Amino acid sequence: MLLDYFLEGIRSERLFYRHLAKEDATENYLSWFDDCQVKEFIEGSSRFNKKKHLEDYIAEHNQKQDSILIGIFNLENKHIGNLKFGPIDFHLKSAWLGILIGNDHDRSRGYGGEAINFLCKFFSRINIFDTCFLGVNKKNLLAINSYKRNKFKIDREENDSFIMVRRN
Image 1 (tube, rainbow, N blue to C red):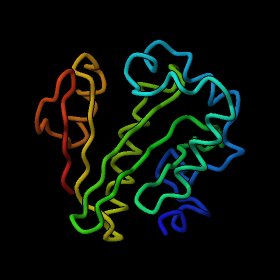
Image 2 (cartoon, one colour; image 1 turned 30 degrees about the vertical axis):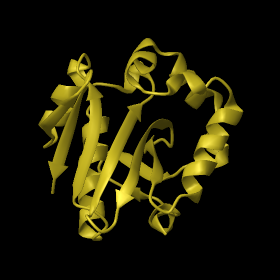
Image 3 (tube, rainbow, N blue to C red; image 1 turned 180 degrees about the vertical axis):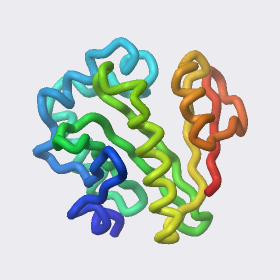
Image 4 (tube, rainbow, N blue to C red; image 1 turned 135 degrees about the vertical axis):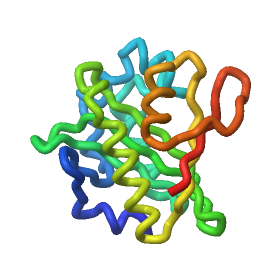
């Protein structure tokens, strides 16, 4: 099971990663969904208006065999974001990626790029997947440029979004 890799957690240069637990559904985490950028660019963000909704979301992902929800923590153990890989196609060795750096003051510091690079390489090294896809709103220019800096290329357009791909 994918969670096994993240029970103790792993770390990159500036960040620590572990699977999320019900206890991580804090007021801080919930406050991320009040942010205008999160509301505009994170699909489904409006459903997270109570801690119970976050707890249910975490529990749902911890039950899935083809998905993993990983918390991103700074080295002071502050929860600053999440990465979701899923669904994962184990046969094709590919996964869909979603990322959220929660608070505005934690964005544009390179945390997202560090997390994406580290975890994509990690999953490739342990032979889970080596291709990542993501969808990004065409208006989210900061995210698009960040993904391009982190080896993603635009694969195609769908409605108001770009589908981007990274192959390790």
